[in-house]
Image 1 (cartoon, helix red, strand yellow):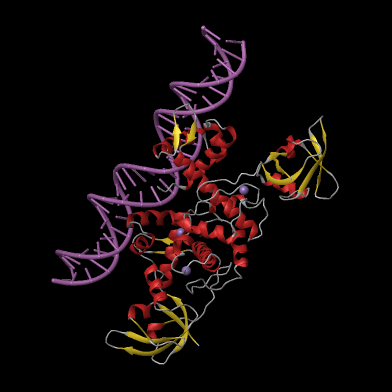
Image 2 (cartoon, rainbow over the protein chains, first blue to last red):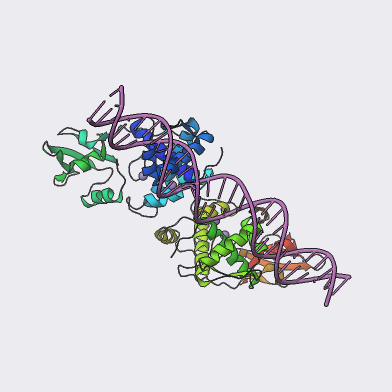
Length: 221
Length: 221
DNA sequence: TTACTAATTTAGGGGAGTCTAAAAAATAAA
DNA sequence: TTTATTTTTTAGACTCCCCTAAATTAGTAA
Ligand SMILES: [Mn+2]
Ligand SMILES: [Mn+2]
Ligand SMILES: [Mn+2]
Ligand SMILES: [Mn+2]
């Protein structure tokens, strides 16, 4: 297993995430946005990744991960999510504060370290944002999650993940007292602007916009 | 505070360590050995560090840290030793296994992270090798340590540090059952080869070579 | 003081990763 | 099916860090 640089790892992760969404080939521009660089730099890197057999790449045709690249990407995601869990569970960071730190820690290279960290944390299956932590061999725990926005009035479920990880969004959730693991019920929806009335646990119903509803994941109880 | 690169941080740390020993100016060759590179590369870097006001450097005259450089170096050492403590105390690594991992973790950038880690560990004053962990403002706890090799017959003290951090040496200590915190008594010394008979705790006296004795630190009881 | 040796620096160059500006290809619009 | 627009790739250049080989300086021995 040829060690990849930090930068390469970040690219691989980005490609993986884009492939998860779109399913299809991933575009140069989208990668550029995600890794915060310019399209020209992406093209440059794609060539190198192709040379290392980490991606399938043909000019103008988009890019996708090879099996090798996918394996590497999942491993980084595993490390990222385990470190996020550590930061929240052990060091008491809030869930909106851990991303940038984990973004660095994920590159620390030691198989043994991650195994022990995993054990220390009690083999968590989900990270603080509800995202599944892939196993050592790359398998994601598959909890059937749905977007809250698609659920009908009367639906009852558990808040179990988020689709957006920005500080702004997570902070907003904290403010309106929404956190992972709590029960949610769709009380009403307003067809005009697609906003919702939902009740969280046993408190008063609360109003959420469609922007929020589209980024909240739930599973049926 | 201008962020320094990983590489720069490693150089600063190396210079600091050399300065601790020799007191005087540090030589290009010694740095090269410590950061595992060539003299020409060191010269290159020294110029850059001088530009950034991290070292005092005049051609052929050796190099020393500025106040700014010293502060940066101590901060990295603090992080290194806190992470080593974490690895040993929380993840149950052995003291000879943690150096390379900490060598990477020390570069993770987050003041808050280190503060919380420090708290999580219970504000340790010494790392697993007995080296003092500098405080946030750069002060080292100063336990008066002596080299065991310099102690007279009859001396009684506590093993409290090591001068060498190689896997080979630390492992050897494990094998002959020497660890930090235990009592040691100098039973006899052999003038011919400067080897020692010492007793550890209340067990049978044990034989150690001068190489070992010179790398063991003790303080008087 | 002069000659030799060891340490250090310069000269010249390479790879990884980045950028801007310009060219080429793909896609959408007319 | 041309034309215009958007996306992607190339060209050329820059920074950081590394290297080898050659030149320079400092230190030591004759
Ligand atoms: Mn990262
Ligand atoms: Mn996460
Ligand atoms: Mn390091
Ligand atoms: Mn240590």
